[in-house]
Image (cartoon, rainbow, N blue to C red):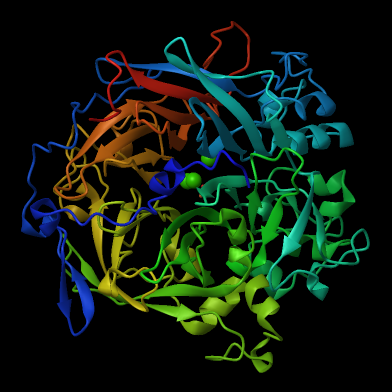
Length: 630
Ligand code: FEO
Ligand code: CA
Ligand code: CA
Ligand code: CA
């Protein structure tokens, strides 16, 4: 831990003592029925337009290969895939000719979740930890094909994933990347890391290369993130199974492997063909060493990242931190696959605000829970109901050796199976979760689910649509407004839809959705310090059929009290908008533009004829220097 303890982190992470606002909050206040909160929403009371929280007008949808913003806002590139992390290079090559060794010295590909860490002694200085989720081989590799064809090409992909730490400084009116900073660092798929918590050293984590089960190589497929009040970064391993496959087509996959959607072919990565570590036929336990949340200290470039197994193994989207009334740390986490679950972790020990170093093992001890939602009141327009947190504790509620869970490590390694054993509710792909700094209510994007029939997940409760093309934003309020509560009340904050093409809430969306602000597939979601709820999309950008009029992927901003939502930004062709962080003064917003031109048609951001599009982080500010969104 560092002398430059970033005091504003607590605020950014929503960990300040909650300010229960007055009359404005009443529209979202809970009615306590039988001790369980029942959320009352603005929508249930009729939408109140004209939010005073949102200081900009909704912008038009767009299919341009550019970034659109409200008048008075500007976006500049902070850093792009392949940019060297030192003055000495190596320079990015538009022909895909950079080697694996060079890629490991450059900004990674497909930037996703990110956090901003302040230096307490210098407001114009910060560190950013930024996930690099995956690669687009057609742009990564010189041959432009869709798969790697050699060990060197797999090594390059491995070097392009993981996490990048960079220093940023506010100079000449703008936040800029500092290319000569000693803090700049790449953490990738071959970086040594430690394993801690109940599953560390477990037999199922041991391999020939690591008989201890405590020293893992690498993190990859890093989706979104979390930020702790003790100044560390949490990176979430999401689609880790995509890079595993089997050299033996006759290999019989175990039920545990199948539960994580492992396949013989892998998912268009072919790492297993050139790196035996990812071959399930010869190295099956390597799979168990991924799918975790990894804690990184950005202020110590020599530090070893740590996989925190107490947080469970699944396809982690992000980690939203808050504190319980008695001062324990609570993390909300989604498992992004069709029909998977929402989890929360409550630490055993309290957060020590006076000695931040003392919190370094906080995420190793505690209880993991999974959510069960009731069917709600059945109201098609404003469904709401109640729910319960179920503890994933070995020996309780059927999590026994007789049912395949030998110990607590087994419960955590096979968290999905354990959660199913408890009767958790299958969800429409849980993506990001965020906690309101105003009232502690929790918001989670359920991005879409177009294949419900394939896996037998019934519709109902917070997943109301049989064919969920557009997604919804779920909200819950913990009993007693205590994040450590066992029960909660839920409602749907927004049901996305297309009111131009469809009628009725099921496909036209909530009353707050109209022709000017419609979107599909909400994914990134986060509160700013002022209580504005920012929403990013990872959806269909066909702009036709069910998606007509929605344009490219985008970023919107909602007033959580009135339910009003406005389109703030539209990204370039073929991108996903994902990853968001704010400067401490809220006058700069960092936004991720992931895989522009994924299916072709983009030269963002370099505009080089014949050049390759590059995932980038942009920094958005106001020409008048004002607070973003206000
Ligand atoms: Fe990486 Fe579920 O998004
Ligand atoms: Ca996502
Ligand atoms: Ca997504
Ligand atoms: Ca993506």
